[in-house]
Image (cartoon, rainbow, N blue to C red; front, top):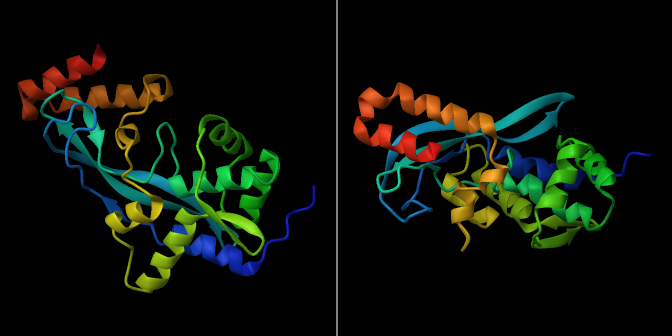
Length: 225
């Protein structure tokens, strides 16, 4: 299969939008998305937002996402973040997979992403297309449908210039979050959760039990049920 021909400007726009998010922080959550209860800070984790290619070398773009403990139901939930449930990559990259897949086969979609120096393996691309039953707002650019989330991020990148990463709130707005279905952003269905994530959270609660006292111990038990 011949590599797709990509207008250089298109690759520049897509890359700039994603790179602008590198090192952004997401630390706001008004209330628990599961029960609506009050939340308190728990910890902050780094998450992979995208993997791009720069000068023939891979570069992993990461963001910081604060986690909160719900004082009502004991759940550990993430701040508002630009990630879809059950995915480990930023929503704009998933949007690219979904939008391009409406124009070409999935294997061609993965090749197209690679041509614009966005690294997503074919299996993940196919999984996103199969599991994300949703439409993506997009526009045509250089003859290709591009998600509005990517266009919005590239606009933020141009505005920010060399002033450092854009704010988490700006990224959320560009990506269309939080939405009416915001709860799903924090609590994906149990069948989509990674078992090792659940085990990791149990260990963390156990280790921090002396610090958090009975509330932390109770939250651990509730998560196991």
